[in-house]
Amino acid sequence: MEKRNYHKEMEKQISTLRGRRAQLLLHSCCGPCSSYVLECLAPHFDVTIFFYNPNIYPAEEYEKRLLTQKQLVRDMTASTGFNVDFLEASYEPTVFSCIAAELENEPEGGARCVACISHRLEMTAKAAAEHGFEFFTTTLSVSPHKNEQLINQAGEALSKKYDSCYLFSDFKKRGGYKRSIDLSKEYNLYRQNYCGCAYSIRSAGDTNE
Image (cartoon, helix red, strand yellow):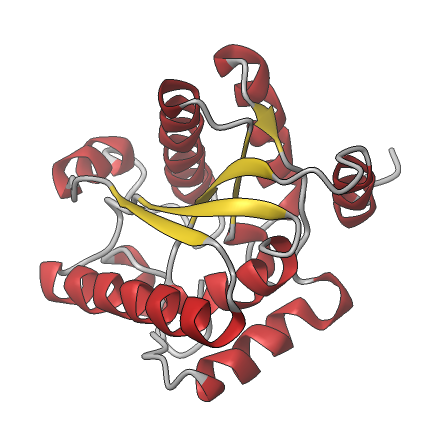
C-alpha cells in the first residue's frame, strides 16, 4: 500500500480554511521541535501549545524542557507577532510508568513508544474537545526518528472519537527538522540529546524528539 503524503494532506486542510484563522491545540514534546512547527502553523491558526509529556525523565529534565518551551513561546511571539498561547498539563510520570509496564525491553520506536505517543495524542484530543478547539495535532512528526504514519493514523482515529479535527502532518518534510535545529540556535534553546523517557537514555546522542 502506498504511503499517504501527510504534508500534502495538511496543506489541503489549511487551504479549506480560505484565510480563516481556526483555533488549534498543538501538543508539543519540546521547545526545539515546536519551533519550526509554530513557524509553519502560526500564520494560519491561533495556536495553543499543549505541554503534556509524562514520559520525560527525570523531573529535573521535565522542568528544563518546560522552561525551554515557555522561553520559545515568549521570544517567538515577541519577534514574530504570532498569536501563540500556552497550556501546561500536569506532569504524570506514574501514568507513563503504567503505560510502559511490561514493555521495558521494547526497542526505541517499538510498542512502548507507540503506546506513549498514542496516550499523549489522546490527552491532546480530549483537551481539544473540552476546551473547544477546532483542530489538534502534535509536533512529533518533525523528528526523523518518529513514524509519521503511526502518528497520523492515531490522530485520525482520535479525531472521530473526540469530535475534534485532527490536522495531518509530516513536519520533517521540506527541511522541517533542519529548520528546527536552525531556529533552536537562533532562539538559544536547550536541545536535549535523548527522546525523554528513562529507556531512551540508553540511546542518548542518537536521537532528539
